[in-house]
Image (cartoon, rainbow, N blue to C red):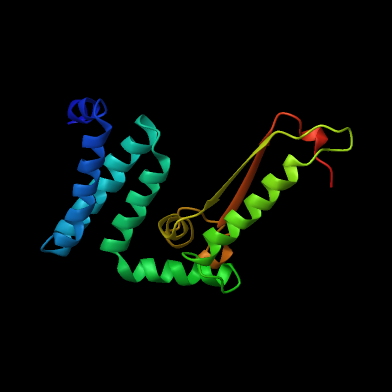
Length: 171
């Protein structure tokens, strides 16, 4: 099984088609048992392979999240509602990513300006939004005892600034 997957890495297009087919097969499954099986297959085999072996982390996260949405729609909606409460009633699907992009863009523009010594600060600004699946896993499954519910999760939004000269960053 793994040999077949490694063979597919020689053709990324074929592997992406396989992932799309697997994901498409979840809602087409006849019984909830079949949906759960296909969801587990995606979450435990294909998503980790896409993320770890191929470096397709965003796609792996989407696969896990979509598999969760198809097989546990009530938990998915509850997770979205919890994220919205934690974000001060901000829509986690539509508004939060746009806000993160706005903040990241402002930071990038700020770094392009010269510092007090006349140097431009070279920095990479990255952001991420935790998926409903990741929030559910963290706040509802008991996986993390410090989060008794999704409302307790503090890292739904994240911004990372990578620079080789952090001492140049002023207030």
